[in-house]
Image (cartoon, rainbow over all chains, first blue to last red):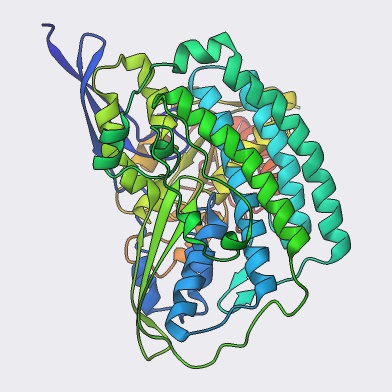
Length: 359
Length: 152
Ligand code: SF4
């Protein structure tokens, strides 16, 4: 048995786009334990609900995280709509699906790039991000923003997508989909990628479930769980199946996300084509009271938004449980037993989002 | 063109932002915007860096990290604050755990507004920072830290 060494990892580290700190307890090169410490991005957003009116809080909810921005705002809006018993017009429901899936594609392409970078495959990183820019063009054409969409509001959505814009968006997406096949093929088959990811960071289905993992981390271990199957927004009316892989290693987690790209393309297509005509928002009056919980599937897994109103313009309590928070116990479990060089790959494989987690 | 404008190295740090501006900073490095064609390199090492790109409103726990990074960078150095929350706290201004922007922690040379700041604006901010670096390099020793240039 070698002597134990503690290696600090972060908060500022080249592979980490965001600050988190891990104390890695090593025996020679082998990781025995990983102790996370967090708090570098905590801002105190939930408390802002006491200062901002429930309608303004949508902007704050969207800025919980700049990557899954739209789904946070949609979850918050759904929760408040639940409190106020607002019927959201069907067209708005379909638009929410389309934008949520666009944000999933953007997030997964971003992640595939960062993941490639974590094992030093720089050109694959560049290609993933090159393709992501095309998707952002579609986002910009339909919402006006790039990373912060700003298109959701309590009662519906802020803007409509006309037929011409929708048609052009679908054309761009078709080209993008074809181009994505190239890079996902590399992730699937390339020997460099496979050598760094196959069999690394193993997580069995049983452990994943009992440690409370969510999203692609859980689905890559063979558990089919996706909160979109609850049928919220228009998901119930669309044709799709959760993507499941069984190997439970870093490669499987990458493949779940790669295959979800095509699922999302199909959902965007279906949503924009089946979208019924009509208004995109309902007028909301009054103040929220009562309690409501909403579960939505983010690119990283299930997110839970809880709101409690007391009949005033301000919410009494606003609480968010984010997917990364649920995945950290699984991550700490996965790290033990692997070599120090594998740490960046394994950490990245859960697609950590610190900004969501700490708010 | 002076010595810095040929290949400035940048260090990026997220001082409690929402990620929105951070992914836009990264987008600047990738093929569509590709600042590497100007010789701009993203480094993870503060002692190699000329320009610090910093996003977020700076919270309590990040304050010492930000100061350390700034101190570790060799002079002359320039700081570019990116995004509304790095400028003033932005949407997080009223949160209990944040300071009001990067200049409450370290001197800032260039301010890039936007929520999220667009990659074009970020590149413009870096170009302005090059001018600041040149000025600081020309200034007598001990002077020239913390300028006032403001990006539009
Ligand atoms: S300025 Fe806006 S988009 Fe940028 S990090 Fe701050 S909240 Fe996020």
